[in-house]
Image (cartoon, one colour):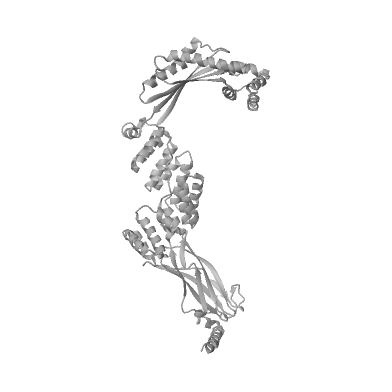
Amino acid sequence: MKKNLLPTLALALAGFAFVACSSPAKMAKHPEMVTATCAPQVLEVVADVITATYTVSFAEGYFHPRAILDVLPVLVYKGGESVGPVMKLQGEKILDNYRVIPRSGASASQTIQFAYKPGMEASHLELRLTVADKGNLYPFPYPYKIADGANITYKLVSLNGSPAFAPDAYQEIIREQKEAQIMYLVNSSTVRPRELTKAEVREFEQFLADALKDERRDVKNTEIIAYASPEGPTAFNNRLSANRERSAQTAYMNATRRIATGVDLRTVSMGEDWEGFKALVSESNIEDKNLILRVLEMYSDPNVREREIRNMSRVFTTLQDKILPELRRARWIANVDFTNYSSDELLNMVNTQLDLLDEEALLRVGTLLNANDDKIRIYKHAAEKFNSSRGYNNLAVCYLNSNDLASAKAALARAHNQDAHVKNNLGVVAMRESRFDDAYNLFTQAGLTESKYSMGTIDIRNGKYADAAAKLVGEGHHNEALAYLLTNQLDKAAATMKCQCPRASYIRAIIAARKGDKSAWAKEMEAVNANATFKARAETDIEFAKMW
């Protein structure tokens, strides 16, 4: 029987082809000689667009040389149809400019796109074929269903963006320093009496006395630093500096003996004060000062430096009169730590002494409050009282967190310092206004961690799932888990999803469905079905087709 079957089958196919090719109209009566495929077979929405490539193949002897065939792709969904562009094919004897399908058979492919509309998540893609011959149309008896659709998992992304608070510079401990200088005559280490009655010395003594009485201040130590001006032999100047250290210490002890009991005193001799010399010359308008500075850069040996500078006879006299006398000195320094208001004190002052707080304290208070309305009050006060750019920025963040986009935009417009935080939050505004390209550019300029996370969410929207997964690492938000899901990293997605909100349950349900774990899927669906929005979505979600 096998020997008789093969010739019979060949004869039948040959007869089939003969019938089909006998006239263009006969082509519509033999749709079985046409096959159609699609990639992908399960459609996916990416950036609100469905993209598919279909291929139509024709058997040998099927396509009539004088036929024109229209292939119409149609996406059929609940609520309507969306029609794609017609692909026109022609036989070998047609003189139009369509793609030619020879008598011997061939395939033709075309990529199409459909703008997403609600309802397309439950849809299918079909091809409707029609033969044209001498003004007559012969539609095929049925369409070719080539794909189901459409996967909208990426739409679980949250496109709110990540606002960024500008940090405060509030110091819990403030280092305070008070200084007085004892000046000496050339080559002398004797403290002249008038040096101890100068205003700056009296102010130093008073500062030290007040600090020792103040409960919020802690005198960490006092210092005496002695110098010699860089003129004359180095060895002599080193001894002179050491002698000034001792005389300055004696004078300090006599001046503070009643107030500085128990305060740690540290003394040091610095020798020739070349650093001070360089600083004073740089700040001066001395002729040839640049030449002097170059000498300091070129030579490190102090003796060579002094020799080269003395050789500049026209300026050395000026140095002797204006620069060198300022370097014959010893410095008295008091280092004090001021303990600023604690968090509890700041919170207590919010309702009673708000006007006593400076800009940094107000910005710190904003971080200590929980209620968004309370934060708005504090940041608004800081912004308006101090024209604080950071205050306006943080006020905008609070408005963004309460979905008050108009107020957020108004606050950001008053932030005069367009720093990274302001740019980030302008990006969040653009993102919420669906100006995604503008938002991405602003996030790129800002360069904050929050900016990177927001860029990752835009990458999800744009179908750049691998890029999104890289940017969202560490975010801990469902967007990070979604990026892993979209790149089929199911275990990482499951491990990242920590919260128990409906959106997280929905993502976990998709993970379970992709793994074929019906028990885990059913468990997550209990939480999903408790939310009306997600329940309605799940009923038509192609991710759950096999589970249902």
